[in-house]
Image (cartoon, rainbow, N blue to C red; front, top):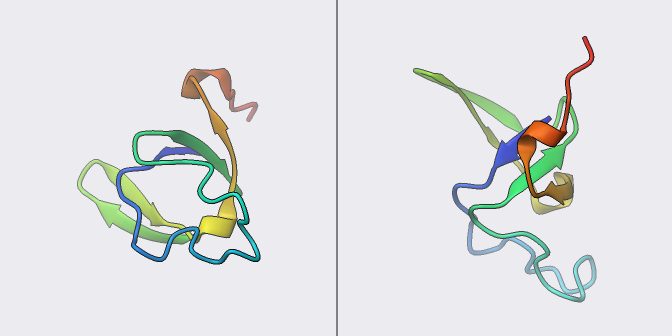
Length: 70
């Protein structure tokens, strides 16, 4: 799954033991996350997911590079 980061909370990437180099993504980045990660919130045109910082798997430049094969 791919999503756009629209907001980050003040505690995102604050754990220096988990993220010694600080945040590796920011608002406006496209990120990859696991299928069942986060909490889903339905909105009019789709859904928003609330993810923890450690649920982000990677960043991608172009979300169309990630293809759905099913």
